[in-house]
Each structure stands twice: as structure tokens, then as C-alpha cells.
Length: 80
Length: 80
Length: 153
Length: 153
Image (tube, rainbow over all chains, first blue to last red; front, side):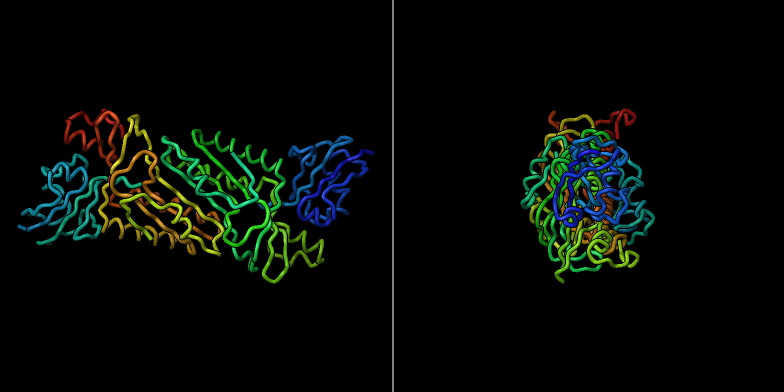
């Protein structure tokens, strides 16, 4: 089990009701974190339509996560 | 013979030393006017690189000219 | 240089900042808040920006533009917070020796900014409803459980 | 709308004039007087404009842009007279619902303006010489009788 800080943005934050929380997960990749927190962020979009960062660096969904990491879950962006 | 008012612009005007003059020509097209006033406007550029207007309307070099017309000879443009 | 601003973007000042005696072409793109989106009347708009990553990703975009179009100079400012109809949400200015690079670099920057930066836009509609842009289906499934097949995009 | 101005182009006011609640994208191109052209140091610039035809041809260009990109709004102002380094020689602003039309229409307008309007540019160089742009060979053959083959373009 790893302790991961998960941060939710925009619609994910609204759905989760918190902007971040600490969770215990059996997760080896960022995608695992996304899938295992689905009940929190509520994304009906596949991960491919969303983005992820680990410890404030943009990452791939296949990027490994370590105990103590902060994983930022970004719903589809809409700048401009 | 036709009486044509010829107007010169930019480098053509500087070369001719006047901005317009009335000339008597055996000219049937705008191109004839351009060619027969070469000694005045001094263009070493072929007419194809220049533009022409007749009576304040943009024209083709093949456009006919009539007695009393004003022909405007435009060197290569450089707006912007 | 990219920055995020919580107040009105100072467009006139930004333009002056870009003055350069060797620049012959200057292209600006501004994104304005429209009163309508996909058939719904918009009243105001809210940008949420995750600034640390918006800045690093934005600087990457500008560096890429400078690799593709050497000798350009570029500035981008993106708004955060609440915006009204007509407000400038994003400003991208590019100066270059000639216009071709100015246009192409400006277009490159805004296209990448729109799709890569962690920025989200919530529209507040005249009818009192609201929704996150690009996330209509999320919004609907999460909160209203309507059929995703009936949604636009 | 196109106009010719013998004084500084009021860029800030023009931008404000283009405000429209349905416009989501605004693209501007400005041509600035550069301090250099084809390796020669420029001191100032002089635009000669044949206004009656510059206006009718300019309106044609704007109408064409509106045919190609419906629902855009466009303004163009071109300078005449003496300009210093850094001065704005031409301003083209296009607003549209979306950015693609704004960029494309703005580019169309400036490209056509540059090649179709009866406007001529005389460069005054730091070394005291001067020359009409696009007409170097004319200038040289007419006044200096140098070999046209040695000229740039």
C-alpha cells in the first residue's frame, strides 16, 4: 500500500468536494490512481481525455507512482 | 491621335518631374500609353510588374483608352 | 514570457512592451468572453488555473515557438477568476522581422496554450445553470445522469 | 472599413471599436517601421498613397475577406506620410466567433493590402541615400545606371 496525496481540479474537485486528500492505494502507475479514485473525482471521461501530473510535473498515465507522491488529476482543459 | 492625361506616382513621378501631364498619343490600350510614355516615367520594369488605372478605376493593361481618358501609371506597390 | 493575471489584462501596456526597432511585423491574438456557446446564453465565465504548471507548460510552449520561428519575441497572459462578456481572457503577442513568422508563431502559441495548460473554464448561463467547458458529459453524468449520447461537444 | 491616416494610428481606440459580445477571437496584425531592410540601415520611411483607389481597392479586399469568412468584422488603417522607426504603418484587426477565422481573415487582408493597394514606400537610409521599395532596380537604372544583375530584390 502506498500513501498518495491526490489533488482534484475543476469539475473533479467539485465532485469530490475536496481539493486534495490522502489515500492509501495499491497503485503502481498514475492511471491506477485515476481508476481507483473514480468514485471521488467521478470522471466519466476516460483517462486519455484527461491529464495528470506527479509532484507538479506533467506525467504520462503510465508513469510510476511512489509512496508519498502527490498526484494531480486534471479534467479536460479549456484555456483561452 | 488621342489626348490622354497621364498621372505618374512615386518613382514614376520623381522621374517625370511632374505628377501629371496631357499627352497626344496613337494609343489604343493602357499598355500603349505605358510604352509610349517610357521616356517620361522611366520604368525599367515591364508593365506586368506595374499596375494601371483608367479614370480612377483599376484596369488591365489590355483595357482600351479613349480620347480624354486619364491613365494612372503605378510602379510596383509596397503597402504595409 | 507567460503570466497569469487575476485582473484585467493590460493590453495597451503589453503592446508597448513588445516594441523593438528590428521588428517589422506584430501579430496579436486575444480571446474574448462571448455571450453564447453552443447555443446557450452565457452570462459570465470563471477560469480556474493551476498556476505552477500553467506557467511551466506555458514557458515550454513559448520556447517551442522560438525554436520553430527563431528571432521572434512572444508574450502571453492568461486570465484567472471571474470574467464578464467582452473581457479579454487570453492575450498572445508575437513580434518578428516579417509577418509570416509573427502570424505562425502567434497561432502556434494560442493553439498549444488552449490544449496543454491546466486551465478550466466554467460557463455561467443566463438561465442560472453552469457547466465546465469540454466537460459537459462529465458534468451531466456526474450531476444529472442524462444520456451522454444526446450531448453536443 | 478601411481608412488612410496621415497621423499616428490610434491602435488602442481601434481595438475598442471592435468590441462585440458575440466575438470570441480577435486577431490583429501591425506592420512596424524596421530599422533595417535588406542589409541597409533605415532612418525613416515615407508612404505615398493614392487615396481614392487605395480606399476602393481596400474595401474590395475587406469584402472578399467577409465572403471567405462570413461573420467576421474587420478594420484596416494604413498610414501615409513620414514615419519613424517603430511607428505603426498598417493596422488590421479582425474579430470573429472563433480564432481560426480571425487569423485567416487577418492574414488574407494584410497579404492583399500589401500587393494590391496603390501605396508606395520610400526608405530613407542612415547613409543619406533613399530608395523606393520593390523598385530598387527602377531607381538604380533610372538614376544611377548600375547593373540590374547586381541588385537584390
